[in-house]
Amino acid sequence: MAATSTTIVAPLVTTSTAAGETTSTSTSALLTGLAFETVATDLPFPVVLAPAGAGSLLATKDGRVWAFDPREGVGEVVLDIRDRVRDQGEQGLLGMAERDGRIFIHYTATNGDTVVSEFTGAERVMLRLAQPAANHNGGMLQFGPGGFLYLGLGDGGGAGDIYGHGQNTDSLLGGIVRIDVDSDQATLWSYGLRNPWRFWFDAETLYIGDVGQNTYEEIDVVEFAESGFNFGWPITEALHCFSPRSGCETEGLTLPIVEVAHGDAGTCSITGGLVYRGRAIPELGGHYFYSDYCGSWLRSFFWDGSMATDRRDWVPGPAGRVVSFGVDEDGEIYVLTEAAVLRLVPVRAG
Image (cartoon, rainbow, N blue to C red; front, side, top):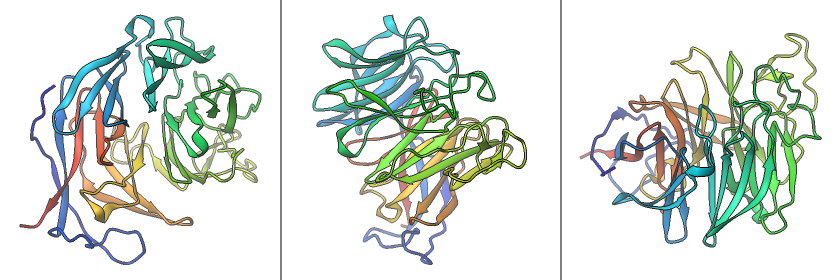
């Protein structure tokens, strides 16, 4: 798990045509490309890297949480719940968040239930929910505006929303769930999602990467001041009718701002990412980065509230399947593959 200096470099074309697009505004040398620097390898499926107080934490799907340092890499295990986690297929430790020394974990119990717990020594279960199938368990945990904890849950699994949760507002499945960590009250915040594996709060804006069925992947972007969004599944798959296959009613639905077709550079399952707010690459401030589990490419867009300016000329993708994105205490971006942690770094002229 020691840090290395392997990099993959691709050219970067700078532009200055619209507010928020990549420009050469840094006082550093001209940004000519981006690279992946390998920070850690031989990991048991890393899924979350997030700031935690004075440092950062890295969670792996098998049920462990590790200390993480941007310079030293992976440190000691700080939490081990492998004895209560089912780590099979899409199940396992799926999400993690930290606040004031309290670690919150979303994991699959040994009987297949979805569990969200707080760990401050002993476990305190805040939510336990039966899952009808072993796939589409969702994953992400993140604190949002107002101090609530948000959880992404899939539609219950199978295919084609066979269990009917996507448009069922009486179920927490198939939506973004808001949890009050002090009262343990969980409510459905928005719905109509198939499997929101990863989402990201950037101030008052929420970005959701929702995994599609067989044809399209999508990124949804909404302003947090509202709630009750219906993202369409299974009426729609991204921007297209799914059930029915044609002539579907889309009035009242919140449709994605980005869709990616299967077959586009190997795309099969969107990996939602995060908005860059670090210091090492100021030219990229405000860009949302995302990838795909099969395609392993890296793309980004800048959202100005009405239009997404798409960029596809960053890096061709790491050697491995992209599972998740992470950020350290300095705001720098990491890409997590099935076995490695890669840091995004600038390549500059001279």
